[in-house]
Length: 258
Image (tube, rainbow, N blue to C red):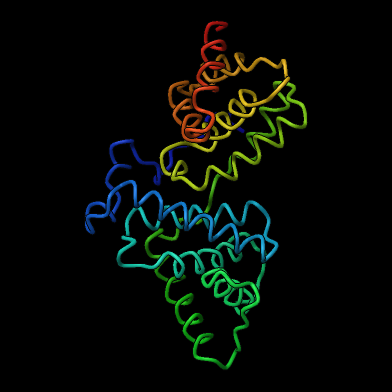
């Protein structure tokens, strides 16, 4: 198996990422579009936890959502509707069966932010959700061009952690960062290998009281044809403003060692 990921038809340049459908066709500010993506991703994650879905299924639904809204506008489609259908479609693709009525109940509860809410099967609400998910499942497949196979960063994280002898806390941190990465459309701009590498680097940089040196990862990037600058773009996006200064200081030390 090659360590160099194949080209992805759903990979967009930084310039293209500045002009998703909501910005181009609906005059939604890019910052607001990103916030709506984050809300959609969180909605899917909350549904996934309630439905006890594996991380890969949740990630699949989040990728479907990000791809959909690269070509369709948030002004035209409510993210609750798209995300509910994305979760249902992801359970099929990943062969993690959940009955539609289960998905409908959880989607309705999360949309209303009321986990005690009950949706009767003979109610208008149930029928509306049924019709909505059926409609958006078909539309998702059309927009996705039936390209439903997803590459995840999780396997790459395990490989990298083994390669660099990362302790369990680093593995867990990198895994959690990979889950968090789907709040942002990194999956549309970067490969799963680049995202995984960024998650491991970030886990090392944020680790307290750990003497592991992530500088070797720079050599790893060069060896396997990855751009260190692209990996750092993901790192900066993952840490946000809270840890940005701290990470940049530690990163400067790492770069000096290379």
